[in-house]
Image (cartoon, rainbow, N blue to C red; front, side):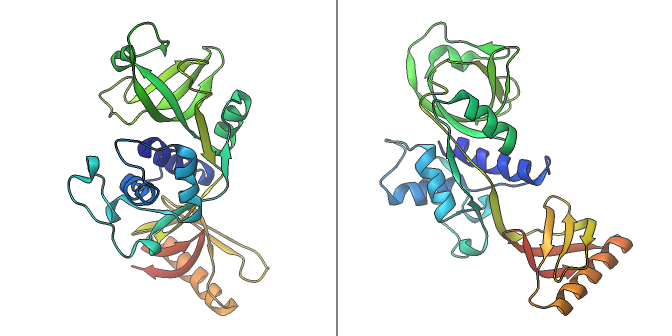
Length: 267
């Protein structure tokens, strides 16, 4: 569950910013071992995307480097106490279960849906094409991320968490109506706010107008961010720093909170 849900968060963050190559790695361990553990969920009884995304909305989930994942947390990793200053917060949670039209709309508008389905033995051997259950017993439930669909082939396009060596480079297609894909649980979010340093990056573009404190910078791997110091003078100074950095090809590092930059370093 954690990997399919976190992948939906990461995909939606990149999709809504129109930054398809965005490097965002959120913590499955924080979601499952911390948030899930707080309500009695564990590897034996599992969890579902809807309540998990509720935690992503109400509390947030930190980045992978602040709580690296190990199976069953057998590596003894612990949550970095600074995590409230480095996290992702989901906006509204959209439950589109049992509504294929709404599932498609969620993918079109926000890029992804976390979806649960029944795994049969023959699914493990999938390599390409459109999967339909033919043989084998029920092996259990699984959560993946729906990232597209193809009406001509009558299928969903999904990202799995079993590595690039499985399936079609880690992805698969599954026919509409197969294995309870649309009817067990399908949930997405309508946006992802990030609170983090961007890391050393480049200023790609700038925009402003005559309105007070209405200046924006497009940073590589982050998309458009509003320059939001606490005064008009500070905003103008930050915009000037970004303009100089862009012109000189210098790098910057910005602290962004929900799309607003309050601190900026130029190198």
